[in-house]
Length: 236
Image (cartoon, rainbow, N blue to C red; front, side, top):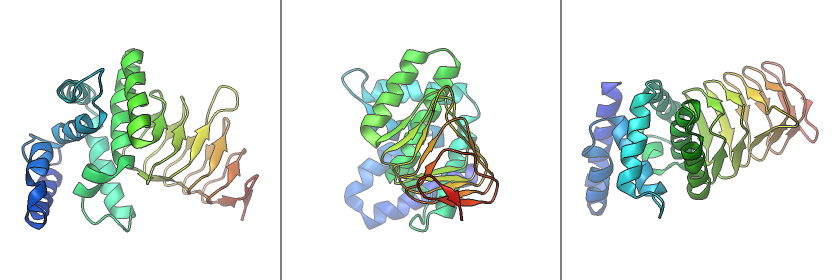
């Protein structure tokens, strides 16, 4: 656990409570009263994802158990928060995506679902995929592998297929689809950026540091460092 990061988040929450005292109990219950970042994320997700099937208390307990079982998740969540803060001009605090960004929260839900999927708990993994889609508007198959340090900005309408692999420092904007034509959807390499409403289909690769312009249809692999745009997408 990055204790400095957790301390920074708690300091930010103190400032938020001073600015908006009416939200004090809400912020205290979800973050300040929690033991660590994992517990805070589990609490926030539980407050959003509860349903007739599982209560908020049940979801918090369940997600926290999954997070602690898959020990890579804590680092991935920390890297996600830092990447958001460093790369989203509208994000000035680590606590902002944690509390308010459905891209971060949808991805945090996926990280639990992915752990469940890898442990052959497919029904529960699909339950969390479905709830994240309903609540956050982001649909990621539990089998998709996503590294830490990924930003899903705005997030509404993002769809990521079953065997996609997304490396670190990748930014994906609203309305993006990574889908399959046949057996495999695309892989996205480190540092790539995929802008809003782009569709990327098939067993192809978006290379390291590549950029896909908004509204593009990508059917062929994109080389590292290249920008593509259009329908179908072509190099600029």
